[in-house]
Image (cartoon, rainbow, N blue to C red; front, side, top):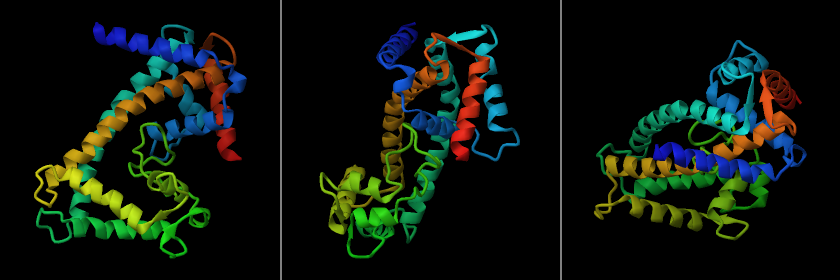
Length: 266
């Protein structure tokens, strides 16, 4: 009961904060892009249905009992859709953490050394240092502006995506420390800190379990923060779909799906 009360309070605060914005003030291009990112999250495989048909099917249960849905109902519905996907993604991320450890631990002795860890760091830095001058800056970012995809398999970033750089600008933002560039030393220093934080036993090697535990702790923390942001995103999308109305109906979803489809076809 306490959990339900907490969720209801959270939703009411989110909806109240979003209500100060009119539908016109929401960045629609961004909303459509995020809507498409959600579509890909729920339908990662090639779909025989059109986006409009799939949207209508995805939201059919929202209008199963009531012909209209208010913002609270819409946000709760989105949350119910998200939970099983997050559970599945956690299982996938756990498996991938073991795979990544195996790649980093080159000699397969179950003892990841700082040297092995930093060898991968040098390769990663080199991928972002497009002109090979030893620093990653705006020039590299221009050459490396296209997203490489996200670490956890998202084709477009969402609040629940792991906060890892997928292009040059994001790399600078993450490791530049208020500078507009990143040196190899900057990046390896950050990885040094990550390595020793992961080495909880303090024996200067990272075991498979230490590596997996550290990653999954970050994953879970990011998901908890991301879920709140996803609720905010759902409330923003409601505003765009409803176009100033207090409720929306199935026909509004169809219209919105058509707009999403048009936005990605440009």
